Structures are given as structure tokens and as C-alpha cells.
Length: 361
Ligand code: NAD
Image (tube, rainbow, N blue to C red; front, side):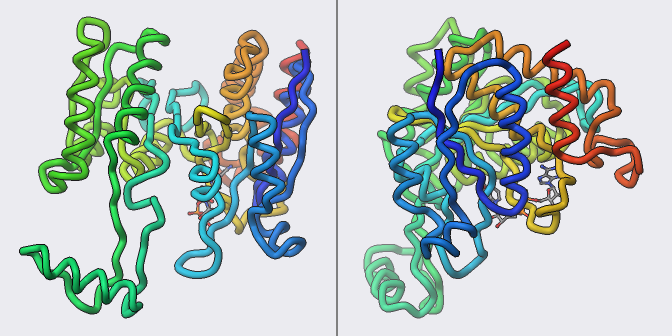
């Protein structure tokens, strides 16, 4: 059986880590026809947009895609391609496992958490109005008419939409995952003590859905600031986390830090019509083109993709090969060495070659 998968190399370190990933996936023996489409900086140069329609069409057609990171210029220019892709394809569930791998510089060796981040709403929805814009002024006037709490006139405005529909589907997805994968507990993370309506709605949806899983999966809710402290001190208490978009973004980086950094943290964005796999890390522009960074996060994202395709044996073999190479600690990138300046560290493609070699042993 062969599969057609869209490959979006991205920019910055994206092309390097996706090249390494592709070599490893091909070495598993699973037949994949890669439909490669440029996005990000190279697409701006060629087509004048970082997200050509061809990229969206390819993902829609193939239903499975894997991508490298893409730079988002801060405060100006184009909207985040990553956010746009998630919204255009309605990839509502961002799934990020954080699990200790022996040989990494993990802060805590007991971490085995899967994070479900809502991907389409919240402050990330992109409903923003710049300071002094006519839209912001109009909104501020209207808000000040209906709200007891007043907004300063020289404010920029971001809107935080949290819906019943959006909350229900991500929370249900997290519970279903827990049930199917033998996970015991879902912790819903919020700040409903302050944001009583938006986070309050997310919490109430969780409490309601949890009743359907009573006796099978335990449910608890934890306030986001407390959760950050708990995760640093006692991460072994947590199993499956479900969070609105912004907290999910921040807490998943915290968990990536607990298990040894962004270089090894994989992720997936899942919707009903398509699934897009990508590392948690960004385009790390200062390392671009140096064959230096760790390809593990992208390769482990491909492991998630293989599982999604039903290629369980190939996924297990590839994951084991990655873990074996990291455990041996020889053919690994600088960030996995005890001393980051260790002259014995290898490049991105060399680490991938060591993983391919392990696969064939
Ligand atoms: P980043 O993740 O790109 O890099 C932060 C640091 O993490 C790097 O300097 C490096 O020290 C380390 N790092 C990241 N990936 C690594 C790897 N594979 N191996 C070893 N070390 C690694 O975060 P940033 O600097 O905040 O963001 C850079 C750009 O990437 C921004 O434009 C941001 O918007 C974008 N970004 C894109 C995505 C995405 O495409 N999904 C995600 C996050 C950030």
C-alpha cells in the first residue's frame, strides 16, 4: 500500500529537518509519494504570498501533511501561516505528547503527558484591532456603552472567542483519546476564576462532558497558573491535559522544556477533513542552513503521522530507532550532548543517517 502525503518544508531550519525526517520515513519501508509544496519565505519570493492556494489544495486532497516550521514576522506583515493553515483546514485539535526519552537532558524523567490544545478560537482567532484604528475606536465606544468596566481609548483590542461548539469538540476529542489509549485522567486547564464567561464556558463544557466518561476516565480542572507550578514540581500527577488555544501553546512549551527542549517535541494538528503533523519548535532562523539543529521533533511528528496512517509497526520501529540513537548519545546533535560545545556532536542529516542505520539493523 502507498500513501500520498503533502510535504511543506517551511523556512528557516524547516527544509533541513524535513529532509532528515523524509529520509527516516522512507527508511521504514512505508511507501509514501511526497507531494512537496513550498510555503513561507520561499513562497513569498516566488508567489508573493507565504501560503499559496496550492498548499491548501494539496493538504485538502491528500488529507495528510507534514510540515517544517515557518517564520511569523512579529507585529507586522503577513498573518501567521501556521494559524491560517489551522483555520483554513479547521484543524481543531493540536496534539502534543511530552514523554521522557532516556539520554535527553530532561528536567524530570517521570513525564508522560499528552496535551490537547484547542486550535481555532481564543485570543489566537486573529480578531484584532490596532491602536487608534477606526475599528478599535468604534469597538471601544460600543464596549464602554454596554460595560461597567471601561476600556481606555488608546487601547489595541484582541477578541477572545470561546464557543460551545469549539470547546465541546476538543474536550470530547481529549476524552476519546484517553479512553482509547488507556489514559486515566483528563485535566482541564483554565482561568475561569477571572474570565468567568469565556474560560467559564470551557470549564462548564468539560464538567458536562466528563459525566459521560464517569467511571472510565477521571476528570479534574486546574487553574492555568497553578498548573504551570504543578507541572514543574509534580508532572507525574498529570496524564491528559485539555486547554484553550493560548494556554495550550504556552503549557506545551513548558512540557517540552521538562522533557529536554523543543528539539525533541513533536506535534499534530487534527481536523475532521485533514491531519497536519509538525514539530512544536519554530524556524530558529539563527541556525538556518547550518545542518546543526536536532531533527528529532520532526521525525517524532512523522511517527505520529505513521500511526495516523495505521502503519503501527513502522511507527514503533522508527520511534525505537530514534530513542536508541539518543540513548547511545554518540550520533546526536549539539543540544543532546552534555556539553553543547562538544566537538563530537553531529549535524542534522548525520543524526538522521544514524537513525536510518538503526532501522535497518
Ligand atoms: P524557535 O523554536 O524557532 O527557536 C527557539 C530556540 O529553540 C532556538 O534558538 C534554538 O535554541 C531552539 N531550537 C528550536 N528548534 C530546535 C531544534 N530543532 N534543535 C535544537 N534547538 C532548537 O522559536 P522562536 O525563535 O521563538 O521563533 C522563530 C520563528 O519561528 C518565529 O517567526 C516564530 O513565529 C516561528 N514559529 C513557527 C512555528 C511553526 O511553524 N509551527 C512554531 C513556533 C514558532
